[in-house]
Length: 555
Image (cartoon, helix red, strand yellow):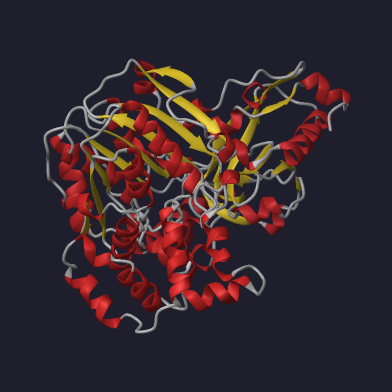
């Protein structure tokens, strides 16, 4: 099927520079507003104040009648030229600030097909409607259902209105310019919640709404982190406004499967939300064209308590044929798991002679200093004895640039790691340390969260030097080095500690294999393209066993 963008380019007839023709049709957001209004955006009822403001400022010039007719034809055929124009006119960075990431048609269709196979809802709600891709598809699948779309962006709601008007659904559709978290209308009969809740990081969420999350979760007997992204709020708002037997499918960033703030969604899945399945889509499939991130489609039925939840992972959209299938994981196990993403991967049987890395090495993240400006030696720590100063990997770049071998400790910064019991120091050392601690207190070292949870606030607690050190978060696969520098590492890196002593040639072969054969697919990719390997995820990497490494028979 032709993509939305390719279909939009066909408006020009195909002979000239198509991008220039596209830009001529939609030269600005004011032009896009004018086209949405001309397509019948006002057929869905009176415009909201902000929508009316955009309408007054809209361009007075419209494309030729033939082009307008082609736009209508594309919309009637299920394409979204308005949404594509919006994505081209408004930069991805600006749209991401408001969580406006538009969903590709194959994903929309798969989610709607799943919903149609479950039940016939009386109402369909898209809580972050955008240009109404989900609502338009749902309108075709459910010809009698009321359609409700909600969004905070007035240009998005005008596009949604126009798309639904052109596709002939204006009489049963309502587009609300507002915040889904405030929505509380109930009806008799089932509601389908479907869409792509906005992804906005916690830094951009006001304290008022963070308090709302905390308080609403507490009413359900659940805990919530104020570090949660906006999509977590939408899961909770769905439980808050929905009724038993309501059901739905949301596509979001997959972070909630593993991160601490995602525990609220995981709890809701096992309780009020009634989680049915989780389908993870690899970044290679481009589930969100503007963001290299891992996506998760979550299906649910409010009030249900299935004995198991299905987990599945796909790496291309062609494999996203349906939802609600895959590996069945019992809810009792899910209740004990703090991270869920690994459950989407089928248990991989290693080839003959291969093992999980965890059989050879324990993997530990480095210590958290809580205040690098204090605990990394500098002018403020002059005079401290060498016995409390440790060459340390403090930047991932130090591992990335080492090309598999870290051997010059002099090029590393030194971390101050004092013993919990200062009485073990000799008199001269103790005098120097006490002088430093006076400065450290003045810098607030004893007041931070990390320091307050240590046995002694002044003791960072560096781990012993790891024979192998790796990066664990970057826009590339992790890098591994043999640690000839006897360097420590803080929480920018992982340390690999062999369970039994490995000969140097085996250690070298292991690092060479890891450098060449580990891909980003084995980790978790976040919005923005960062891939992260937690220690347990790294331990599950498949590597040659000691005998193969010693024989040098692996690539």
